[in-house]
Image 1 (tube, helix red, strand yellow):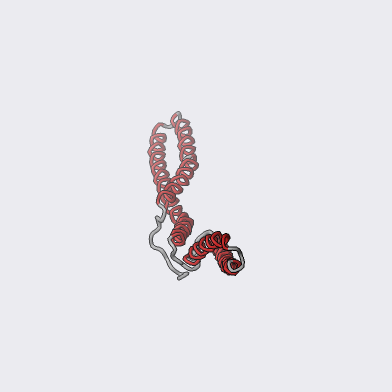
Image 2: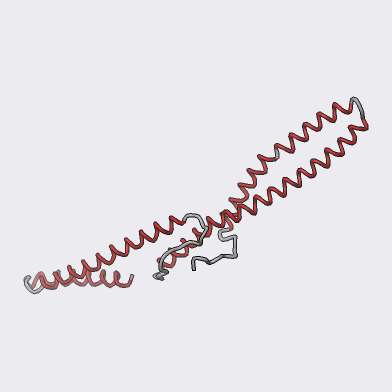
Length: 188
């Protein structure tokens, strides 16, 4: 199942779209400087040429307009390309977080999903490893606690045979409570 390939790229649309829009906004604002600089440079050059040859200046103005339109279209295209790249990039972040969240819900609901794993190429592979190690340790401690509760329950049952009659009610209450805890442990 490690080779599973997901076809939905907007796993967490709120995060992925917000991330992509932030990156695209930063790219757009930072790269708008070049067309504005070229426009300013050409405007100064056209003003200089206009004093020598008005016909050449008119031709340069038409070329400047065409160049600015082309640069604007390139700007929009590049920003769209960055947006799509950000969706793919954020998919490798949102996917593991979605899988972790789904896995935790399953654990909470008592569904044993086995080990947590992420798709090959996803980010945060170490999170799945750490998570699996932590849950293995918790389950081991859980098992050790259950064994100890069984032993304590046996000791208390044996004590019930030698303590005075007036103390047996307390031991019975403790035994009942231990049984409840053991049942809860066994259900998990």
